[in-house]
Length: 185
Image 1 (cartoon, helix red, strand yellow):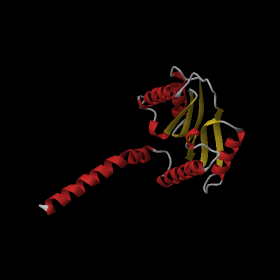
Image 2 (cartoon, one colour):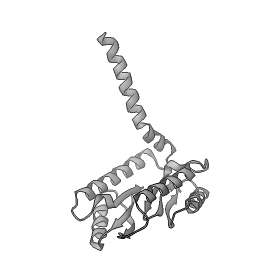
Image 3 (cartoon, helix red, strand yellow):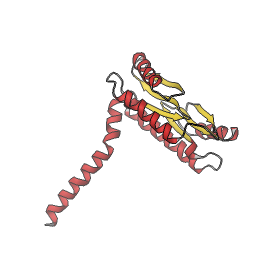
Image 4 (cartoon, helix red, strand yellow):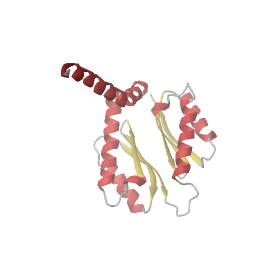
């Protein structure tokens, strides 16, 4: 009985591991970057966010870091200029970072755009991109800050970038759309 159960258990665990990692496998298969560049960028973003979490001035939940071929983008909201400066300093200190670009807005006390609004906006933009078969939507990262849409990533063509931008601008509720999308050369 034990011999029969052990192989079945191993197959189930292997299947679970494969399905859990399936999104990453799909992302890499559709990605404009090489597997090595993708892994390096994921590592850079992870280290930056880990360092944000460990820092007393930078509040992890207020900032998000993304990396594309060593070009780092920090998005979010800040309470003080010192917080922004510290976040940039942390990002620049990570090995492999070539440049740091920020899209950071000052926190607003009575902003009419809340977390739910940002999540709805994110979902609407993502839905529009996924529905367009001419866009590799897994290459595009969408951030929403105070109901402003920020597009990050590397796309395959100028046409893909233009279509992505048009979809984001057409979504109701977006105050603005900022594109940091780069065309793969």
